[in-house]
Amino acid sequence: MARRRLGGVTAPSAQARRAAALAKRVAAGEPSLGRARRVGRMLRELTATHVDAHCELDFRTPLELAVATILSAQSTDKGVNLVTPALFARYPTALAYAQADRAELEEMIHSTGFFRNKASSLIGLGAAVVEKHGGELPHTLDELVALPGIGRKTANVILGNAFGVPGITVDTHFGRLVRRWGWTDLEDPVKVEHAVGELVPRREWTMTSHRVIFHGRRVCHARKPACGACSLAADCPAYGEGPTDPVLAAKLVKGPSRPFLLARVGLADDGAPLEAPADSPAGLDAAAATPSAIEQDVP
Image (cartoon, rainbow, N blue to C red; front, side):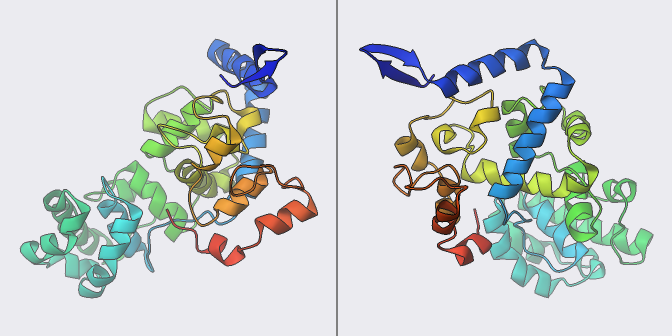
């Protein structure tokens, strides 16, 4: 717990006391109205903070996104994006995957890990799309999850980002964060999806998934979250799990949008206070010093 010195006596900071009280309320069963209001505040802050949130897998068509998402299992978006340009050029259609030479396909996707299983999924996906859907990827949840290699998480990624159908993507990172924030205590991904779906307007499901994941990759890390540089701190019951000292926390914030994220909480690059708060015109000017970097944010 963060502490401050008072006349030689170490006392918890006001923020730490608020977080401890909130954690107790969450553990005891936070009233639904209170939780809804708190989640609403966090959603608004995530929207303002991660203006650049988007799907970080490169794709042009629904089929390409399906393939990239299958490859992303136990891999990184960056690693997948290194593989897919050549892969998409070699296999532009579902029929091409269905007829793929297994050895060649495995070699092309080898670096993403579990390449044998993934090759089987891609070949099976291509065959099923050709045989059952005329070569075009379907756009309903039930049809997508019936395809080889596509589970509910992957289906929601495809629906939300390729077809514009709202969906909540509950991967390991999303589940970890919403439990840390006290949005739910459930572990099962489908139950988490439904619980969060009740707290978030349906039209915001897809973008909320992106914003939560962006925040996790840049600020709220699994082992050491940057609590002292987090704009969600006031509504987070887990405040104090990571460094609360701004200088230490600022070092943990990642990504090209780091100047904006720090300025959002009134901090300079070294964790020192800005002369103007981040939500004042001067503070926002400082935060927006490199807008092109924000637009091109990557993990």
